[in-house]
Image (cartoon, rainbow, N blue to C red):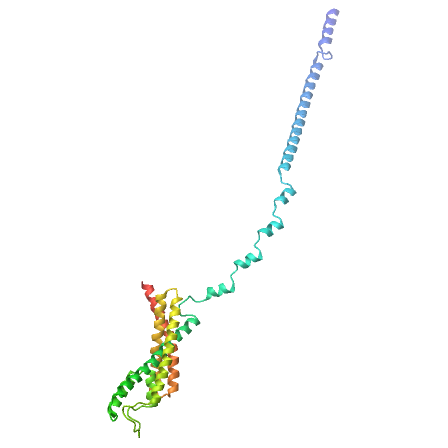
Length: 301
């Protein structure tokens, strides 16, 4: 029994709780494995953190390396010299800026539209020249015709002379005729006159000659003015029409004003002055009428 117990005890002692291969020995081995695994996990976490840190540093360094430095930014920015070199100079600005002459040219009226002061002055002179030419040359011709008719008469043919005088007055231009009628209304001989019927007044003949010379002078001036205007015009046909309109307007208005003043009993000086003003105004109005007609024609054609 003792051996058996001892055997049992020995066996128990070898394999029991207190033995190497008992229950206590198995627990130490498992704990060690767990701690080893924990250490491995911690080591892995540390390695991961180290890798992340290394990657972060690498990425940051790469970004910093690729980012432009302050020196690069400054080197690429335009310098003051570049800005000044690209800016227009004062000379360039002055060369492109509109000059007073170009500004005035832009505001000036279009040529040949009779709206400028020069155009109106030319139109007035055109009208006055035409009026004076017609009056002066016409008066001389009428007087010359009268002298030719009277010179063929009998010295006592008073009635023939009176008829010749009536014919000459009818042929005299309106303004000059109005002045003559205001000075000497009658057609017969002056009271107390003993002159022959076939002889005319020398003073009247000389006055008619002077009027003719004045008329021819105005005719030359009017033709020269009109020719110059036509030669320098862009549209010569239209300008020729304006010149003709101014001349006709001056003759019509001047004659009308002179005749009207005569019927009102004005003296010869007032009649002449009124005719001159009428000729100038008529020339301007005549050209304006032509301009209106040209504009109307262009709007239709």
